[in-house]
Length: 94
Image 1 (tube, rainbow, N blue to C red):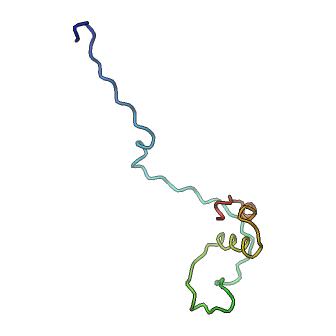
Image 2 (image 1 turned 45 degrees about the vertical axis):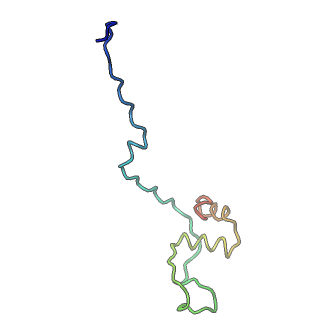
């Protein structure tokens, strides 16, 4: 006790902020939103005409990626228009 008769009390430590609480908890990824894909897949290769496949690097595309490529490059839509048609945001198409 102090000479004035008051007790000394400890101030409780502040609670950790949310980033500190979640620091060690792994975040789960967002669920993949359903994408509307209308183009039929006809074959297993999409490449420039006249260039042999052996001279090209192979890149695997998902069906929704192929749809975005078709809408923007073949159909001439903007990324925003392609996103609306696929039911996703422009940033997802980008």
